[in-house]
Amino acid sequence: MILGKLGEEGYTLTPSLKDADVIIVNTCSFIDEAREESYRVIRRVISRKSSYQKLIVCGCLPQLERRKLFLRFPEINALLGSADFYQIDEVVKKVVQGRRVFSVHRPSFLYDSNWARLVSTPPGYAYLKIAEGCSNNCSYCLIPKLRGKFRSRYLKDVVKEAKDLAQMGVKELILIAQDTTFYGEDKRGRFFLSSLLKQLELIDSIQWIRILYTHPAHFTHSLIRVLANSKKVCHYIDLPLQHTHNAILHQMGRPSFETSKRIIEELREKIPGIVLRTTLMVGFPGERAHHFDKLLKDVERIRFDWLGAFVYSPQRGTPAYSLNHQVSLKVKKDRYLKLMELQRGITQEKNEQRVGKRYPILVDREKEGHTEFQAPEIDGKVLFQQPYSLGDIFNGKITGLKGSFDLVS
Image 1 (cartoon, rainbow, N blue to C red):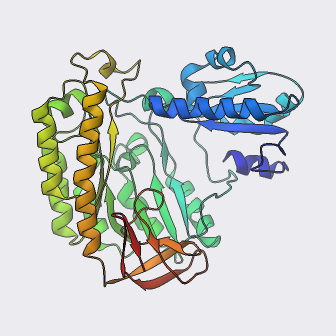
Image 2 (image 1 turned 30 degrees about the vertical axis):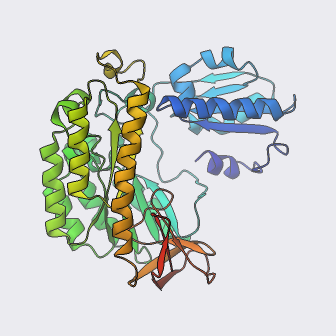
C-alpha cells in the first residue's frame, strides 16, 4: 500500500539504498527478535545513508515505542504508526522540505478498494488482507496493542481487490488477517468467511484460494462444509494451536485442546487428505516437563503436515509478562529443538509418500514453485530442472526430496 500510494503520486521507487532520496523502513515489533531485526536494519541504513537522505520508519515499532525512537535514533526524520501509512505521500513531502514528522495514532484506519497497491510477490500468487487488528487478547500477545481492534474490510472491497488481482494474472489468493475465521463478526455479528469464500470462488481465473491464520474458537461447521464442497479453496488449513495442554492454554487465554481436536477430526472426516499446518509455543510461564511431554505426544499423534514453533518471549505490557514460574532460556531452546526434530521426521515421512505422484505446481521462480499443499514462503517448495514461465501451473511428477521439506520434480 505504501509503494502503491507513492507510485500513484509519481514517485520513482528504487530498491537501492544509495539511489534513494527518501528511505522507508517498515517494522515489526511482535516479539524481541522482531524488534532486534528492526533495530538492526535501522542502524544499517543510518550507517550507510548520506546526510541529504531522509529516513522514515513505519509500522509496529513506532506504534510501540513512539517518540523514544527519535531519542534512540536521532537520524530518523519521521515516525508513522501501524495504521498511519495512508499519510505516506504527505509525510514524504514534509521530510523533503526538512520537517520532522511524528504521526502515531490509535490504529483505526482500514483501506478500501480504491487504494493503489504494488504487488511484490511473484506473479502467480498474492496476499489478500481481509481484516486488520485483533480482538482475541491472548495473554502473551502485543498485537491488539500494536494493531488495534479487529476490523473487517467490507466484502465488496475484498472481492473487488481479488478481481483486480485476477486481471493481473494472479492464480492463487492467500487470505490473511490476524484471525481470518473472525471475519465479519465485528460488522455483522456473525462470522462471514464462508460467504466471502463463495464470492471469491466465482472469479473465473482464480484457481486456488488459501486460508491462513484461522482461530480454533471461530471455526464453524458451515465453514468446513464450504471447504469440503469448494473446487477452489485449497484443502489446506493453517490452525495455530499454540499448545495442547489445557492448563497452559487457559493461562494463554486460548481455547481448550478439545475444541481444536474436534475441528481437526471433523476436517479430516469431511475432507479426506486435507493438509494441516499449526504453530506452537514452547516455554510459556508455568510449562513443566509433563505439559511439554503431552505436547510432544499430541504432535506425534495428530501428525500435522507442517508445523512452526516459537520460543516464548515475555512482552512488557501483556498479562503473561508478570506470570510466575518463568522457564529458563536453555530449557526453552531444548524444548524447541526437540519439538522441531520430531516434526522434521513427520514432515519427511509425509513428503516421501508424495514421491511418484503428480500434482499441479504453481511456478514462483524459473525452477521453483509450490503445490496446493505448500503455502509459499512458509512451507517447503518444489524444485524442478526444466524452467517454466512465472505464474504458470503445470502438472509435475514428484521424483524425490531435497532435505526433509522440499520436493523435487
